[in-house]
Image (cartoon, rainbow over all chains, first blue to last red; front, side):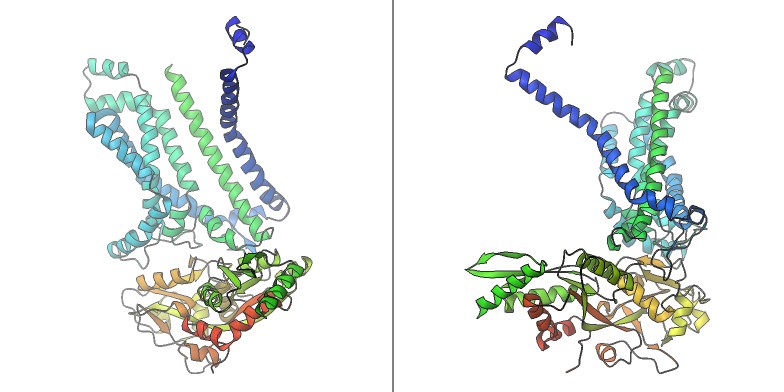
Length: 307
Length: 290
């Protein structure tokens, strides 16, 4: 600001200067709005749920009991174990499906595909990310449900497997995009050096590119996990929404997010049930926050390691 | 005369601080009634509102669903004039209402037989309340159709379909089958709508579910229910009205205080033969079978 040039600009008060100021203000607000929103959302969720967590919620019971009975007479019970297990199992299975799938796609797009094939694939992967989650849920409900019943001869197809497949497909695009970015960030000189040493294509990828991009790839997986944790509608429709600690992929389960979505609309504002649902929200918020933070740190670390 | 009525309606509404009155249409005042609540009642409530707008041109009724609890809370918060409910208001809800200066008055507008649904290929002939408790209750040990003497072949495992825990249907079924402080066995598929329950049962061979009779279709089977060793009764509008079907429940509308003005006119019309014919046509039982 103290350079002669900018002084001269500041002295000039005309339309261009005013527009410059306005544009600066707008961009500034845009830039910090994300921070404001995150803080405001956390403050809101905390306001509704924190006092309940500290004053009324039995945390030991919450983390060890599967008895989620918020409408029980005479005393409601808030046990969160089955919901946590449901979210974890669905996300876990989704990652088992999505990780190999999206890493494979990323390696193919980043290392093998060229020209039109590459561009088409990239567009298609991004298109996959644009499908609304309720449509995914609908696919789980109407296509996968009867398919699972027929294929595996199980009584019901709204299961961890169903939700896991749906969620895996939903998380795959973002994981593919980030993983491909991580592969692209590996300098070509690495590949050239390896090829000069006589390494085959596969050896280059496996021993040079993948290790070098490992932090970015882990970050891609973590973002996928975060996506899985936060997904609501599709999981609500495909998982069966049953309070149950699943012991096999063919058991139904219920996710934290789905519980909030299904119950919040019908609860009296300010009631214990309402606040307990906000407590679930705080738990989700903390978990996804940690996952995203970890992913972000890894991406930055991956970038700084190479430079 | 009509004009005078509308004026009183608007005045009383304003005095109660309940509804809002719209502008003038063709020089006449227009009253609006807000109605919200039970998903079980929502189709009937919409049919009533639509029909009523034709006969009482001056009054507009807007109907939204969301569940019994949602409607009752909205009435307590003063945002709606009439709350639809498929269960009685709880003591705690009455307390909250009185604390907010609202005096809920209950109006029974019809009855709903809560039907037990199974897959259409299920050979079951009837079920007792005790057997239902054995399937749905926490202490119940019935997990297979063969446990209650039903041969389902490969689909012997019972798939329990239930509702989300704040639906009026969930609460009514619990109170009637498991007792007021009864506990559901966890692990049932808890669906978010009466229609969803029937649709899932339709597609799942080993399933059992409960939902309003109005949601019945030819792709699912309704199981006759018996209580206290009596003969099993098939759910129908008739058996719901004469009280022989054991899990029929009253459908209610709650107003703040005894209704007056436009709201009273509307409630009276709902209970009139015209209004009751509409609820009958939607598959629910009217308050009397005339």
